[in-house]
Image (cartoon, rainbow, N blue to C red; front, side, top):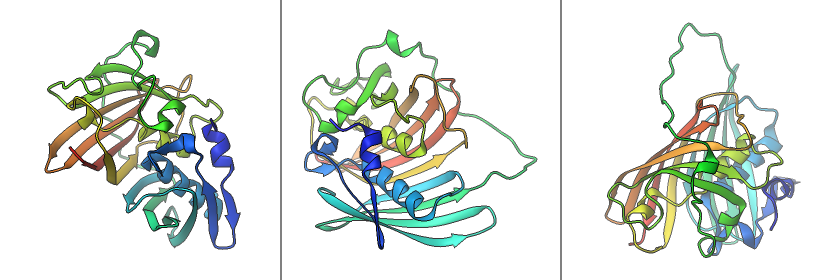
Length: 262
């Protein structure tokens, strides 16, 4: 197993971008999972254009599979007084795999302040059972610790496709970086798997993430996540996810569209 921090450290800068290769323990089948591709896009942008303001919003289109050595090329679209827009293409032997649009923005004084998104009322992680299967499943599951704090378990065929999880990286070296949080947020299978009796092939198509704070920090590496499946039909699933830190402060919200072959 290669810890997440060690894997990110293998990103190498080349003349026109960066290159990196995910080890087999970070794959989902024969390709790296979407969260890792997204994390590589963020790391590539930081290597090429850092230091950047805090990440405010990111959109990812997972165009095709990514395996073996991939190339990350970031393009600076605009740098304003407080915001920076960057596009990133992650490509492998089969061509373009992931296209990202990243929006960074420095905090500004404002007369407005409003906060919603109350966290679920749950106990501490140690009070709940393991979420990820102890055997089988995607290879990259072994890098994450998850506890099922509410909703249905995987393949429980519960009526509602939703779950609440405590999540953290098993690698505790840098669990609060934006890159690490992006990789973590996409680690669980989709909420559609709650309604299924057995695993089926799936592929995330698009993922939109909004960060709600500059302060990406938590306690003991734990983050609290709630994912709700909105609609599952015609071979596609749409879901919404919110991530809080251990202090129940909202960190990000995201929406995801997934092809589910069931």
